[in-house]
Length: 369
Image: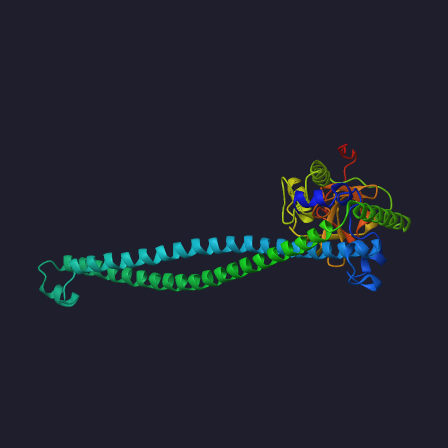
């Protein structure tokens, strides 16, 4: 989202500390344009309905962003696979060329040392039978060498043919992924453009109302979450978790940008994957893959550095800071910040380093002023 839009949309309102999209289950469940406010102009709709509309739009954009991220990761792997197969195919074709050259060399050598006369006749006519026998032995060796080279050539040609077909199929998959990536990229841009138009249509006063309503909803959701007893006590992170969290805290204030994974800007899973990579552990790139492939942990066992995943589709993720707070890249138009854990509907938590030992002495990272 452009700086021009943010200025039009009143930056202070849009990037408020609790600028998160689901203050409560009732609001999150509503769809855009539902109820008695359906079809009304943005300035005349209720604050609740207008906020729900924005929340739903941001959620759709985030789902599209994570789909784009997943396709981008698949495309990277597919390009590496195509490059690997191209290398193998080049080597196989060189082996074919080498075998053909070897066959030509053997043929020329045998022609020089042999005639149309059979080895038996040469032996009878030779004044030096031993020499003829020796020469016959050489000819036999050459024939066997040529047969071996022919077998190698046939094998190399078969391998080259199979590799060529495999490489072609891999390239086709790469092209299909590139087309899908472009479609998903266009989808995100179109959805963000729709959000831009909606925000640009609102006055500064209306945006301030939205921000206040959103902050209140987020605070209420946090109170309910903490009162439920979902969290129980504080735990120390592992050394890797400490490094990941310190890295994330060091990114506070940098802008959200969809599809970005640092170091100047991030989206939600770009921040979490980059933070854990900095800690020395590779985790999946997208929030959905992080939820699917990392070890799930109960919320009551959360420790700093764990990943908190949001929404039923696992389309948002943050790093747990401790004391009921997370570090996250919230959405377009915002910056990386510390937020209440319950500002979005929590799906669950995962741990990138389940086998790590918690630190005996842990000092939380200093937050920027």
